[in-house]
View 1 (cartoon, rainbow, N blue to C red):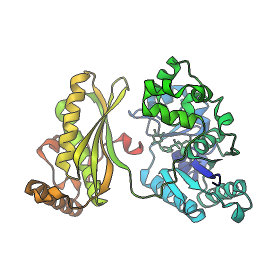
View 2: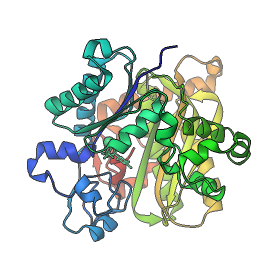
View 3: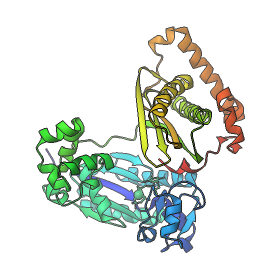
View 4: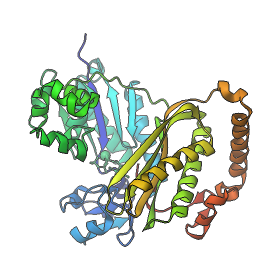
Length: 407
Ligand code: TTP
Ligand code: MG
């Protein structure tokens, strides 16, 4: 079989770079998008000048200001980033039909066999970077390799304004010296487990007996082991529909107030439900996310027997998960989120014969119609009413501050 050539393309300091295009005075300076530092919330994007001071995405804005008082803090504008993202993806789609957008500023491209068009794959990457620069004014970085995981790590290492090609056959030696945290999917928890086994580099992970990894991490251990060895046969998935839909809110103050937590969960759940129905999807998995005062974050998930797009089912499931989580942890909550995944096309389910499911469907459709006409808050349940005293409203619903910028 022909060796595949996969590109991973990621824009540098995306939100910040978009702001720098709009306002060239911001270029070359420490800039942070995420909000004013007197507000709660975290850094969404930091310029490389700001990163030199230790600033990074996810850092609380107050910490960012302490480390780099001269940084320029910008609120940011999500619609602008979304629009730029669409133009970015359009450029890539123009170059190869095998495109998989991963996030707003990141995509994989299968370019196997494309050397005949561009002279070489390296030249093709140079051309892509140039088009992104010319048409959008944005810097990007590209990794090229025989598989997704190696291409992604190569792009990351080449940043900013980088281009790094890993020759087929050299995947393992390229990965070996890197710290395990560079492997996508390894968070602090997995890192700790692996460190406990004496594994610090990707090479050490690659050389670990599979059985040891499996006994500590299960199938995830097997997955990581393959990736550490530069083996990854995941295909480029066309930009079908979203794989998950979620909404989250950071409170102005950490809270233990049950009715506020439930109201926010319901409101966010309704936004998720409306989004699902707009896309003609149903979901089988409901997830809630909680971040506590000390920044520790948990997610809790439940899989339903039958896929749903009903607000009531999404919220009821979320509420059950919330109650369990709150009984296990007494800290105040900083952020609450709800999401759905495992999406399927909304078809008429067999249980639509069941009249209660049918009534729910009609009810939700009616609510959607009214909200399209009169705004999201035109219809509210008793539970979400208290939100009107807390958050500003627009036709589009409540403005629940900060995390509109987070993914
Ligand atoms: P990233 O590509 O992870 O970051 P970046 O583009 O800012 O910087 P890099 O040069 O390292 O690629 O994410 C893309 C955008 O997504 C980022 O500009 C802002 C947004 N984002 C958040 O809103 N919250 C987050 O926690 C992260 C990581 C990103
Ligand atoms: Mg980026």
